[in-house]
Amino acid sequence: MRAVKILHTKEVKGDEIVEIKIWQVPRSEDKPHGVKYSIVYINGGKRMLGYDNSEGKGDHRHYGDKEESYVFTNIWDLLRDFKNDIKQIRGGDWDED
Image 1 (cartoon, helix red, strand yellow):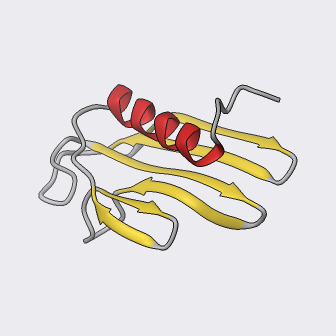
Image 2 (image 1 turned 90 degrees about the vertical axis):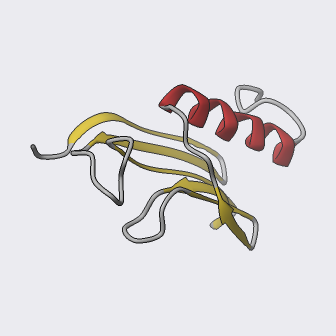
Image 3 (image 1 turned 120 degrees about the horizontal axis):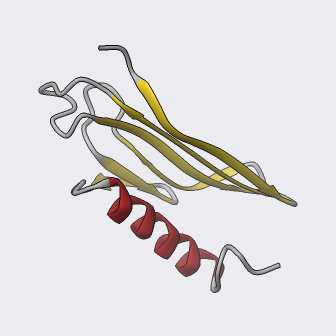
């Protein structure tokens, strides 16, 4: 089975960019949940937040200059966690102008 795109969105507001890429992939030791993802929040050209499971690194989160493990449960929780982190960084909702 080849990777199947589940979601790809990119939203730009001024200097802020949110890009979400999620694929269904075959389950493997590296991707036991059968999902590959790369989600990023960029502000002023700098990655402020990112969640991904790049090859050989497993599920993890980039928060500022820190990189830490992330426990992936499902896509909905991943998107909720990402949105909550953006709120914390921005001090408000992404949907606000």
